[in-house]
Length: 267
Image 1 (cartoon, rainbow, N blue to C red):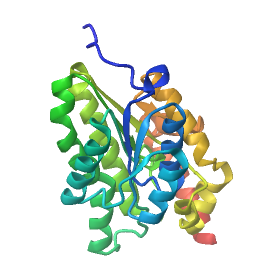
Image 2: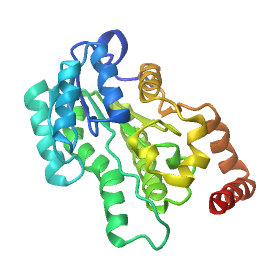
Image 3: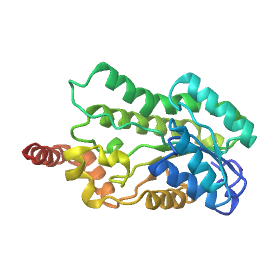
């Protein structure tokens, strides 16, 4: 089947494109905003931390739209404000996320927060964006998922479960709408030197810190993969092997993860 015609939204054609990045006041989101702006995109910087959003926007010549990128009302307000600034949204980076730890005993509030921010923020944004994108026959949705969505994250059941949900939704979007011009990407980094990594404690120290990279490296990898039209964006080559082992040898993979759990528990 012939692919639908549409503008190249990354690479030489990114100049002038309208890009929204949520959770862009720090870390990966700030790096994505900077990378898109460096390629000539017009970038809306969103974050709950209004001062950080404004600082990043000022630094890259973008537009700060502080606020909630998770609730239905917050998402609608963000997209309306972004359209007012940009005219149209060509690329939406659903990057905002929360690292909620704990196990089966995590509080209902913790589970609800993780679900709302890590999954429903993507669903609500897509609901707002799809009518325009499908009418135009083009649009690009970039979901920051995390390698936890492909694998798991020990000591953080709400985070691991909801990141699986974020990946599943990104897959569904791509499978459903790619013939109508929608391009979807799932960004799945392992350890990244951000405030979120600092908050992961012993589990992060064992699983993520040894191979952690800088946010700018994540953003550079993301833009290259988007330009190549790759759905799954892996910043750490070893993730692919872990993901393959999870699918083809689940018992051995689970044994290995359990050994890591025991290492964490030994302190």
